[in-house]
Length: 231
Image (cartoon, rainbow, N blue to C red; front, side, top):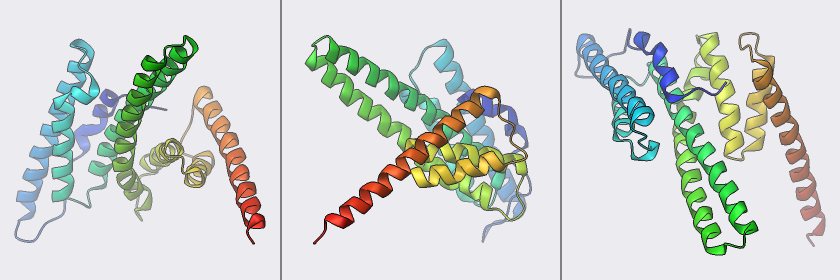
C-alpha cells in the first residue's frame, strides 16, 4: 500500500475547510492564510514531482519538495487542529521516506557486491552513502509520526484515514526498529474492517508480523539471560 509522493495529490483539493481561529486573527483571515499556504504546498510538490520524473532531479536535491514541506509546516502551525492537513502532510513525508528507504537498500546491495569483489574502498563509500540515505528516511518518518498519530487519536475520526495511518505507522516503526510499536499498529491494521489490502500487501504484512514476533521473543530471551548473569 506504499504510495508515491505524487499519488497523495489526488486528495488534496478537500484539505482546507472549517479551520480554527487564532488569537488576534479572524476566522476568515485564518481560512485565507491556510488556503494560500496549502495551495502553494500543492503547487510546489507537483513541480517537484515533475522535476523528479522529467529532469531526473534527485529527491534530496529537489528544492520544490523542500519548499512544499515548509508550506505544509506553516499551514499546520496556523491551524494545528486541522486533521486533514496533517494527514496529507504525513502521507507526503511517508512517501518520501519510502523512497529514501529503497535507496538505502540499493546502497547496501552495492556495498555487499563490492565486498564480494574485494573492492574495500568502494564498499566503504557505499556503506557511508547508505547510512546517509537511511538517516534521511528516518528524518521523514519521524516527522510523519505525530501527524499520523493525530489522525488515529481524534475522537471523531475518518475510518479510512485512521486505517491508512495505522498501516503507515506500523511500517514506519518497523523501519525505526521499534518492534513493539510496529507490531501493535500492525495488529490494528489486521483487525480493521475498513482497510482492504491486496494479496501482496497482505502477504508482506503477515511476513513482517512473523519476523517481528521472532525478534520480540529473541529480545525477551536476551533480556532474561542478561538478568540471570547479574550477581
